[in-house]
Image 1 (cartoon, rainbow, N blue to C red):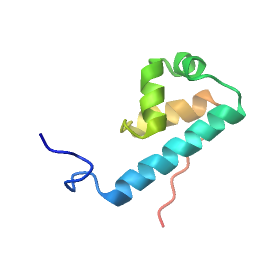
Image 2: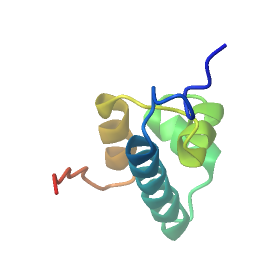
Image 3: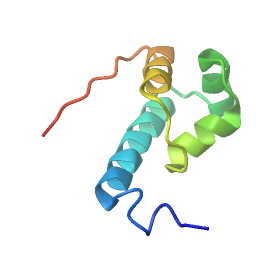
Image 4: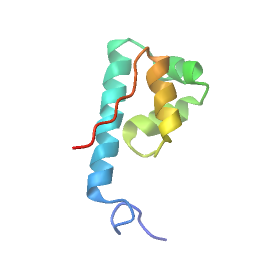
Length: 81
């Protein structure tokens, strides 16, 4: 079985971006003093999906990311550099 993270299927840059987004979402959740369970209920998903997203082990869709941000009273802005 291929290792998606070391065989080039997921580039190091893509993985770094995923971790950066995950860290920002987790930090925002902490600032709002929300548990993963509470956020999951707001989003309409399972706690395990929030946990996997925050650890960078889950590649969420753009729609899911927007829903998570909105569930915390935030907007999702994407900038290309």
